[in-house]
Image (cartoon, rainbow, N blue to C red):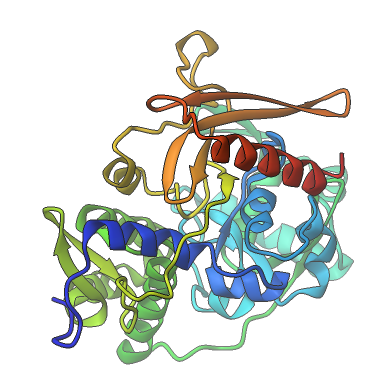
Length: 366
């Protein structure tokens, strides 16, 4: 359990710790991404992309689109971790070499090698460049009809043979890369798996045991060549991470941190959190912390939605009091809110809402 010098935290302390350690004092963009370890990406703009909305709470004076504009100058890469997003280059290196997607047959491998040779010769390459040169056709995947050239590019990117140099009007610009030969002995592989799981726990901790197990599954899917090593690290979680039984569940968080410490204080601001924000991401933990079920309904038929297309949980202090749907219409920010219980009647809530909307307008450049 917790070290002898550290008492088990109360449930309220654990919740406050989860908020405060994620919403650290705003810093510069590179440091914020390094502190988080991973920023999940999503293409929907409601009213901005998830990566921008996540960083807006953690980067000083952040404006929508700053990540895409500054990406080429940062020591980060786009890539697949447990989901797709942005992460420090050193972390991405821990996941390579990754094998090709399991769905690739001999024909797909041949296409991939041919495409990789094309990018190596051409240099900076966009999907349009590839489609103009090759006639790969289309492929059925995940219930949809996909452009095979794009699928091949994404597969080569996943394997670490391509990297995204920048984006032009949202479209990826790739270049071929060579990774140095890494040691592949059992001790090194185990260390790499441990470092990757540490990143995930550092981002999403504290985690109840069920969520920790799910996180390990996602990581194993992301680094299939380290599946057994991730399992070994998972099996020794109680010695690797701080943990305690709180509110009827065992919780895990990074070793050396004390959830009861006074430094984990929560301010009284109101924040609109994207469905992919680290505070919201674990739906099991969300339900435990705030007593109501939050669902991402963007892919739910409109007539079945309860909260809205892109409902963003509203964190006020240490309570998530409800959700907001936000959109820009004719250059003006519009909002609709819903509440998990009664709408707060305090004037402090109205002031916090006004300030949050004002800050969001500044972030959006309205």
